Length: 273
Image 1 (cartoon, rainbow, N blue to C red):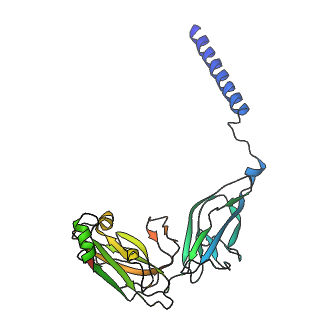
Image 2 (spheres, rainbow, N blue to C red; image 1 turned 135 degrees about the vertical axis):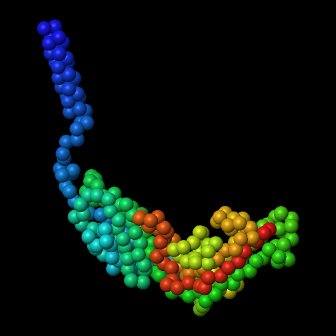
Image 3 (tube, one colour; image 1 turned 60 degrees about the vertical axis):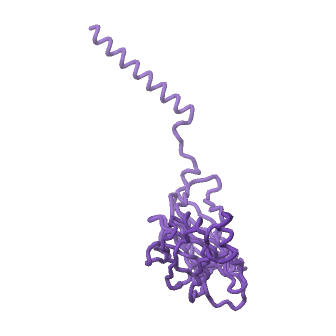
């Protein structure tokens, strides 16, 4: 009989604890109650994309850019100011691409679309789309400057390190600086998808600042190469505004504004000084 009473008392105690816990949760709103705001299962996603030419000049008309959610599940286009609004989009996480003929394709990765007091998700940062480069690199002028009279003396004094000049050769009818993307690798199979390091440089074609396309031994070592190592390099025309992004699946960098073809692959050795 005593054992039965003990079990009965234990059950009563558990019941009181559960009742207290439920009362506490309700009074402290630990259990989220549905609201009108949360019952709305869709809302718009808004943002802005701006077009620029190869020299980085913003255009006056940014209309007609195709905005696509998850490979075309929902689409819209931008107005003249570059604004877009994707309407009645279910809450969730999305990849939103933007593209226009002549301007490549960009990506808003992992847009977290959820209920807000404004009833829409705003992508706050305006992204820039470069015109796809039409500059053809005809060749690369590569020169080890380590033995040049002026630089050699500075190297001996420990003031400077060795350096290699890499200058894309191209047709430039207005002598303005143009952007180029260089891709470096220890393999001769180097391009915009297979490389160990990349750099953007600005070249005007004539009378340009050689420091714009100068690579010191220290910089090449920081890229992961060693003194005396052979490096292969390939150059593509690019836009001045940086619009590259990391691919959300494989993590590789995508460069939407590169010219369709690049220079021939050429090689040089990292200076030993």
